[in-house]
Length: 193
Image (cartoon, one colour):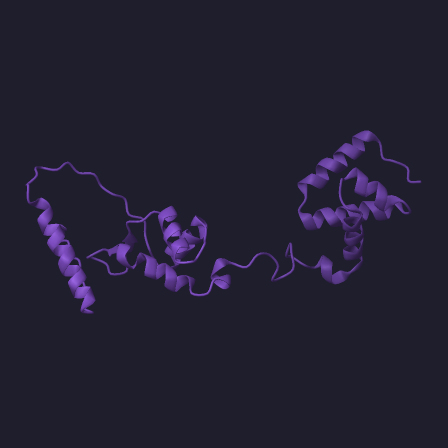
């Protein structure tokens, strides 16, 4: 039977154990169990509320030189694969969804934005059979160089009963040109230099 540590020491060991990374917890438990000898694994696993096998693995790692020299927390290739690796055609579907909702800067062709927010894009992707989170949508927006655009509110100086006709005509022409395979260019001529 192993002689228990005093309560104050046990509490310090428990606090210290909780402050460590997963890898260091295993190894610390392994060292403490090895110091105690026979029955040490059981005592330490109960004291630190960890699995018996975790303590054994920590002891095994301490005995091997290669495990001690690892800088990674987990083995290479471990963890969940990213959506970019798992979902075939993710980029193409994303660009298809944003095709009708993309605008750009007339002064810099590299700058583009969308009028959709992240949850809307995620819903449109889901409708296309691609179920992703808004975090993945953020990554897609960054990957394809979309920028955030803040709407500026300005007071209207007046209104005209036929004001909307010009926008309807522009939309009609845009759709006609796109059906014919022609490019559509948007220009804002109010830019001041």
